Image 1 (cartoon, chains in turn yellow, cyan):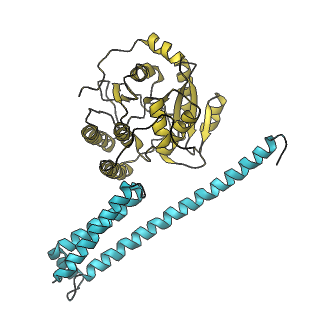
Image 2 (tube, helix red, strand yellow; image 1 turned 135 degrees about the vertical axis):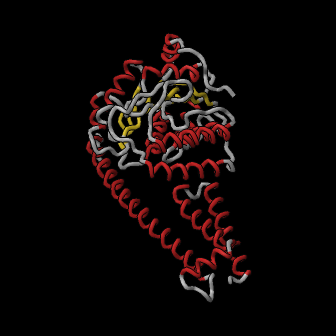
Image 3 (cartoon, rainbow over the protein chains, first blue to last red; image 1 turned 30 degrees about the vertical axis):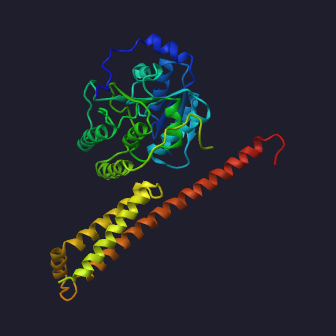
Length: 261
Length: 120
């Protein structure tokens, strides 16, 4: 059961030394985040200048693309809004086709703190997990959010934990690290709107090893949350349906270099 | 009162609808997003078929005394209208996106021609 790592902060030097050997990329989905995406890029570079950064612009109407390009990040500009799932998958496709060994996913709104990257990278680099998710509820400090969103987060944590037979506390976290296996899976197949819940289930069904580690998240730095109360109820229904139907699907173990192109 | 064979037939038909929709989702030929309305249709029709007293009561509200199953047909037609309207909005969105894609592709091809050494 106890899959939530109870370890203290990972030895930063060890993580950095292992990282230096690997091709590594940060996938940053962004929708109208001109106020924060630049800071996110700067902070990732401050943590490790060797990280390549790909910002996936999901049809922003502001200067998100310009801000990210000025800082020399790769920018994938989607021709129209695909939703967070389609945006994130674009980033993983890029990572897959360019042969990256490890990818981290960090929201462009600044709620994920790149200085906590060693925490989520450590289990992946140590070969203990294929997918490591930063959880707000696995021991870290509190997190404020709207009532429906918190309710949804709790509900999904229960359901997902039961489905994957492993304790999961934060199924909506988009702060995560994956190895090459995870990159390949997400490049080939990634759920659509409100995707983190389904992605968690899908990964375990594909026999990827999942680990959750406690992280603290910040208040959103700017921009607007894309999820309103009415929509979250719709999404909850949709995701519950997806999880239920998913129980009746058969899943293959992904081969590292199979598929698509 | 609704004739029993009508109730049975309606229940079987709506149950089959639910099974088919489920299988389409499972085999990934139908996305959850577009399945929700169909599932709702199936569930409501199944409920009205099985809950025979309820169907009579609802028929009574609308002054349908002679043949309560007419309500089943009306509810079914209403849901079909909703699904069709939903699809119209989906098609409109797809066609807008298609236009944008075509335009982006044309711009991209032109850029590629400009940067190609020999030209096409």
